[in-house]
Length: 253
Image (cartoon, rainbow, N blue to C red; front, side, top):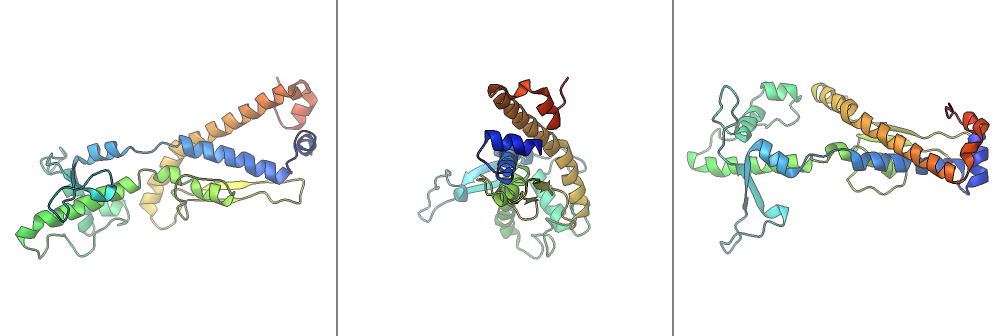
């Protein structure tokens, strides 16, 4: 109740509004500081080259637009055993197309290619265009997931009525805002990355990443918001009342 009394004295906001707004600030801070994978890093890791789409007039189109870019293996081998000379993209496509492959088992067949290997039953003359199509789609798909971890915060911001810069992916997070009409309010947020319940192996990997990356990011966001609030309290001369601070749960030493 001390917090409510302090809020009434120093702000026009109602408890629920104030709490939800603070949570918005924290989650937006967390989203902005959640790392993303750069597209150049993805291209380098997958060893790809980028070429322009050839237009109807036989001329290359501008690659400023993503739709005009074609991604393909640059011919450099992955260096990994047992086929070090084979490009990584080719190895990944083959692994995705093979039922029961180590790759599909480790990813719960989430990215499996149905119908067997793409070259199966096709003419040799078609291999190049088929390979290029699969390679380009795979790289573009990887590009689209570069902000996967950052987007895991968007649903929370959406529910709280805040602006967010990345699409809100369903099932990655949830929030229960504080409701007006009560002096005692609470706002619950849950980042559910790695908790889909559908892909056990992927969930384990994503949950480990969430604990390793997202928890520290969220804690730093909370710390920054608290420090900001304390600076404002100091500006208003509220830090001089030790009894008030202790009633709010602030440790005073």
